[in-house]
Structure formats: structure tokens, C-alpha cells
Length: 294
Image (tube, rainbow, N blue to C red; front, side, top):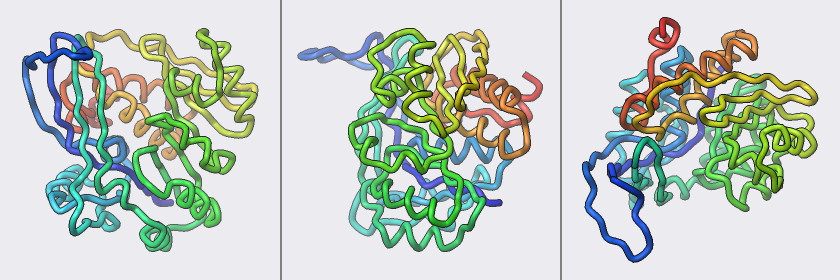
């Protein structure tokens, strides 16, 4: 069984702020840094740090060689990561204020992934392998359909959530992973209580296994009528940038390694709690050894 993370890679331009910039306002940042990021890259590294052999497929631009080196540094296979000859790598502008963040994305080479690349990559995988995707690359509907045809299991972290998601064949997805805001939009639920959101998800996606993270309230696993709640671990958050990606990577890794749902939720919650106490994206993700003793 192999794991394919087909996803985005971005330069993260991070600005520490006193508060998020408002319309017509110009303010100075308290601090600036640049990191390797993108939900695809973060989740590939989370899977690798959680003990999985993972192949990252995607596209970088003419400035993208550092991403290949960075992924390889953490043990991620880059056999299917290609470079575009004229586009730049995607990037994100991230404001961080008092432990929260807001993000602007520019897709760059992430949006140049076509059917031919998808076909070339999927030739190397087979029935039973896991495909992990997010909503930051092009050709996602085609990728889902072709992976399903091969009998691959498909995990979709539905982020960022937008109208394009409803054009994808979501009925072919095995795992849907969302936060509470994404869950409300995905289920088309005008509700606030977690129980109501869960009921709406159960009705809309009765066959999928779903995980909904709810910040300081923890996380929920939902499959048919089954609901399992995991409480959050209390920590002082410095930067929440890669928390969701860490959770996704560790949850799937634990499941693939044979853990129960409860064990997977607990370890994923611990890992994401460690992540938010550190600054940055991929570099803030802990190793499995750290999580086990935390």
C-alpha cells in the first residue's frame, strides 16, 4: 500500500501583526518571515513525520527547486513533483495576530496541473493505495474520478472551501476532512451548534467517513450514525497555520498503521496541539516520537 499526496506547494510570506489589516488601513508588521508551505506540502510532511512513506505529486515553478530539497529533507518522495518552465510557484500571504491567522493564496504552478500529469502519476499507483488531496490544485474532479477508477482510497481535506467543491464527484471520496466552518458550507447548513452541523453532514454524505475539527472544542469522527468526540488539549497557541494539516496527516497515518478511530483522533489532536505552540507551517509539525511522549 502506497500513499500519494497530490497537492499544493506555496511560499508562505508570514507577517506577525498587532491586528489584521482593515479596509483602507496601512499598518506595519511586527515581524516578517518566509517559509515553505501549501496544504499539500504540509500534509505530506505531516504524514512523513507520522511514520508513513509518502509520495508528493504536484507542480512548482521556475523558483521551485528548494521545495524539492525541502520535501526530501523530511523523507517525502518527490518522484512525481515536476517544474513548470515559466510560471512561479504558488504563494500565500499570511497575517498572524494573537494566535489566529488569515491567508491570501495565489495558485501559480498549482493551478497548471493538467489531465496528462494526473494520468502519468496515477499509472504508478494501484487499488488500495491512498490518495490525499486538498482544494488548492487544478484538475481535482478528474483526479478523483481516475483515482476511484483504479480503486484507490481517497481522502479530501475540503480546504479552502468554495463553490468549486460542489462540482467535484464527492460521492467517490472515502474520507472528508473539514473544520467547522467548512463543514457548515459543505453540508449547506445554516446552523451554529456542533450537533446540528453533524446531523447535516450525516444527511448530506451518508457513506463517507468524516472528521470535523472544531478548534478548542476538539474534533469529531462521523460515519453514518456513528459519532466519536475527541476533546482538545489545552495549550497556549502562537501560530495556528499548519494545525489542520498536521491533524489530517497524523489522523490518516494512524488509520493506515492500524489504529482505532479513537486512537487516531487522540494522536492527531496531540500533534496539532504541539504544532500551534510553534511558529511557521511545515517546520512546526512534530515527529511521531514527540507526540507519543507528549
